[in-house]
Length: 402
Ligand SMILES: Nc1nc2c(c(=O)[nH]1)N[C@H]1C(S)=C(S)[C@@H](COP(=O)(O)OP(=O)(O)OC[C@H]3O[C@@H](n4cnc5c(N)ncnc54)[C@H](O)[C@@H]3O)O[C@H]1N2
Ligand code: MOO
Image 1 (cartoon, rainbow, N blue to C red):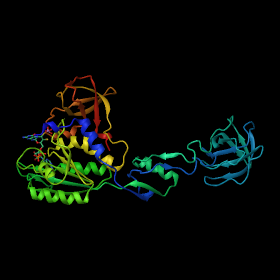
Image 2 (image 1 turned 60 degrees about the vertical axis):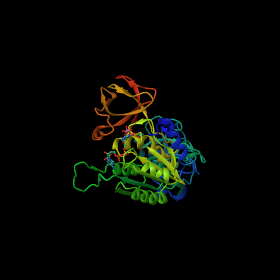
Image 3 (image 1 turned 90 degrees about the horizontal axis):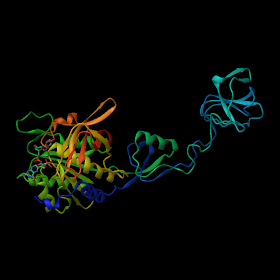
Image 4 (image 1 turned 30 degrees about the horizontal axis):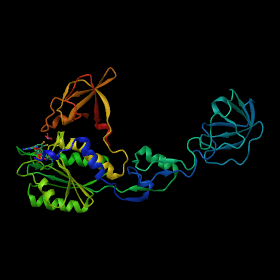
């Protein structure tokens, strides 16, 4: 195996992030832009608010030093006042309504009594209270959202506040997945001793769906060089990113590596110094990136979070692409090896308001079933041989990755 070519985790990330270029952009209706990534900064043409508005249901008054006023108008939200308030005058205003010129404060309904057209105020009024000033939230021309922002429901709703009907976004990357392996069974087929059910397909499809990407999936295909070559060619012509699962190590049926080397792909990452997941191979041909993921589900998962997801985020046009991490205190000792980036599975538990990471009993690449109780991954860098219970370490929390 070409150990010389194995990259450290940060070096491999750097190579991939440099190699991946955002896909093309398109203009779409804001209506349909939920989940998409903005290609341009979004500016507001008007201020927030664009008129002086009441923050409560109440009465706009012309001065604060009286306890009786004459009500001269009633204004709902959206109505524009026709009159300026004169001395001793008040206007009934609803929450969000534009207050008339001459208003200096709004008194809450609860603090008043009305007798015909006379308003009696039963509290002290403070100057300017309950009036939102023009532009106090945001000035006209200000940047509302920056290019590279993914429109989550919250951010999308902020965009909708501007009234902008169309936006420029990155188109969704086209992703193809090729599942390989004679022993890999589709869901629904009868259990066969010695075989495995295809979990990688569902892991990859599920994670990419979280990013708003739907995939073309081929397979499981047999470990046959011609079949795999044809499938790779088909997906490469259609997709920005092709992901294969299985067949990247040293076995007789591991066809991906020689195929890439022999069919015009330029290899960017040929192995990494990460465990699990060392045999990852990444290559490029024209504008298509190819990720050859190891078949072991644990190795596939680790490569997904540290390498594939950052690459997908870059293709999508996102600004922040590296996996979000946070510091966490360990409840157990962890062991790594110098020169290797060890990724360890942990479960999180909070006791007496203190959250700690517990090492899952098995860390074997060949084991996966304990992922059912795994909340995240702790990374021990190449210069770190161990971490001890009580130490703070870096956690990739599954809950924060999408
Ligand atoms: N002689 C060597 N053997 C191995 C090496 C090595 O350097 N020299 N590397 C090991 C490492 S590290 C890993 S990781 C694995 C990666 O193997 P492959 O990518 O070639 O994967 P397969 O052999 O195809 O499968 C491994 C394992 O995973 C199961 N599998 C495959 N596809 C799926 C799927 N879609 N869903 C669920 N499980 C799947 C498969 O049945 C195997 O059990 O290689 C080591 N070997
Ligand atoms: O890197 Mo492999 O994924 O150790 O088993």
